[in-house]
Image (cartoon, rainbow, N blue to C red; front, side):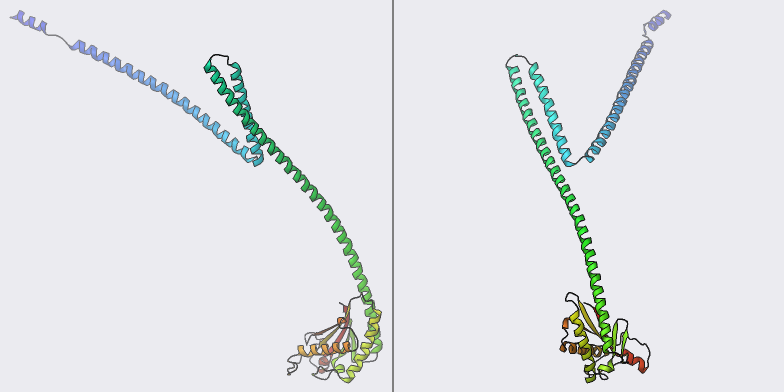
Length: 342
């Protein structure tokens, strides 16, 4: 019985060692695979890192080239850019032509395919030569245009220099004319001053001894009562007598003044500040102007040319006495004669 029991136990198979061996092998395989995965990840990371560095360097180079290109474009004008482009095209075409020529020279006679290839290359070479000629013609045309433009600029500069020289001459002539004109004007002023002195001398002789005629600066002043009645603009008989003497003196002086001396006798009418309001004279302006015009007309009747006479009315705007007395009013009512230039 015991022996039968032991025989049954010996017949039972022990699977545990085999299982352990299988697990160990599987574990080793997994570890090997993990090691391969890690190694592949490491090398892949190194390769990716190298590519990133290369990409960074390329981007930097591209940025530098872009910046250089922008600087080059900013520093050249349209004409030079066109010429540079055409010259680059010409150079490239020449290089390609040389390469094609070298390829054609290196080919031997090797059959129909070689001949066809040589014919194609010859055709391409001819096209490149045509392109080179066109580019050369365009460059030559642009050079001619540039030369013409430089010629025009030189002509303009020469014209500008001539204009500047002419302007300097004109300024010199203008300065000389101005100097001569000033001398002529000074001479005319001196002549007029001399005739004004003669005018004053003759009027002093004519009006000598009259208390109602005064000399104020460069003017002879007649009191209005000598020529006009109160509030009137018609010359009185006594006033015509006095004005006739004055007209004779002016006529005598006029014969002595040369025709090229431009002179006028200014006749100014003045009133006092007391207002007047009549149907004929609404204000002192009208009264003073009417009196000055009346004297002017009388001188014209006496033969004095009208172009040498000027009448002006100032009303009470230019008093010579600011007082409010009868004497002040009388001094302000006046007719002034002044010989001046035209």
